[in-house]
Amino acid sequence: MKNIKKQTGFTLVELMLVVIVISILVAMVVPRLMGRSDQARESAAHADIEANLASALDLYEVDTGAFPKTEEGLDALITKPSNPKIAKKWKGPYIKKKSADPWGNPYVYKFPGSHGTVYDLYSYGKDESEGGGDDITNWEKE
Image (cartoon, rainbow, N blue to C red; front, side):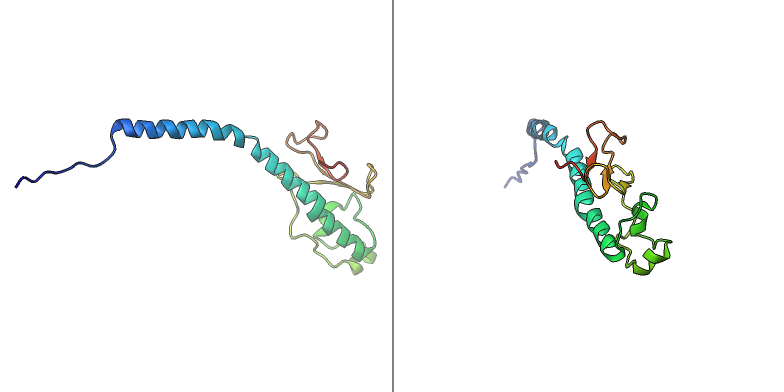
């Protein structure tokens, strides 16, 4: 009886076909996903502004009777204010740590607001400078 060994495995042609098919799939999918990271960052900034920070500011106002001044900024949500009248009513911290936008920059807070809002709360967005059409604000909705 002869002992015949059968070799199993992929040929070079088969491997090349797999590589070509994967390359075609990547070429079709990657362009569709390219803008998604910017979109995700913008959505995260909107959520921070409209829900997280807005809720914390509202709680601060309910407890103390006033919103933090521009000079105190969002730090007033973390550390007890120096004003004894407000410090007595302060029940914070209202947020765990100082919030940064998805691009790593601090959110801008101004009280009173100048856009028909009680306060202005915004991120400079992707370009990291005021204006430019990519700012994410609490006074303009998507």
